[in-house]
Amino acid sequence: MKFSLALLAIIPAALAAPILEPRQSGVSVRCGSVSYSSSQVNRAINNAESGNYDSSGYPHTYNNYEGFDFSDYCNGPYKEYPLKSSSSGYTGGSPGADRVVYDANDGTFCGAITHTGASGNNFVQCYY
Image (cartoon, rainbow, N blue to C red):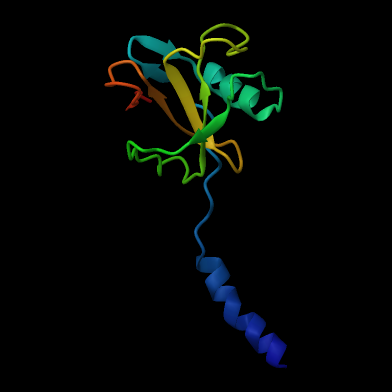
């Protein structure tokens, strides 16, 4: 009987719970004068999550020292991976200036950042 009452008490709370939005997959981004399609952004995240890494150290933790707000898309912890416009994406070597930032837990797109236009080795946010 007590179990039934407890069950009845949680039903209104469950019905009032918000409906979860689907996870954000990649979106198109513009970093400086370079534009990337959503499929290029998704490919970068998929390559990062594949487990096939070279000696470059990517993907690696992005600590967000700049304090960018990625909360529209995810909450981290963050990883970063080079964004490339080639058909295969980043395959090693120089990573270039642009990065996709994604949630390390589930691969959700968080944002994009670039060294282009930033001072030193810092980043600025790309447009998306």
